[in-house]
Length: 100
Image 1: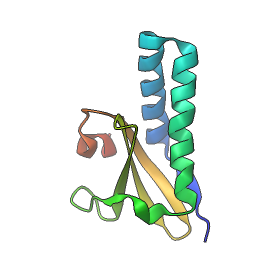
Image 2: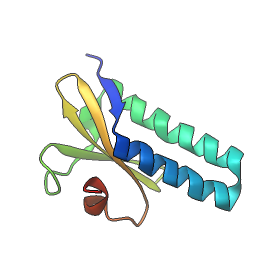
Image 3: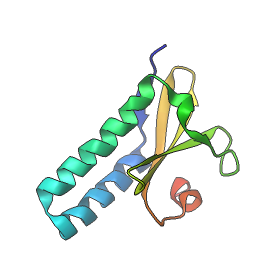
Image 4: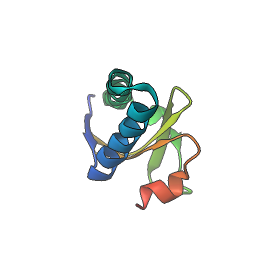
């Protein structure tokens, strides 16, 4: 079964903030490439969304995966969709990020 992957408005904002920070630190090309890597990682959930770590302690049905040990992607599987609810950088409180 193939799932559709949807980034929530919150996840888009958080992804943009990560990109902006990287752009300041390393330049626009590096930031664009890293953003694309994160988005690609999200879309890999189309084929096997249950691979993430369950985080029902934060929210019922929430799961997380990590990209390059620097970004946590929080998502929920709803029927045939994977909804990315948050994308946060290392060191950020994932609980706070999903309630922004």
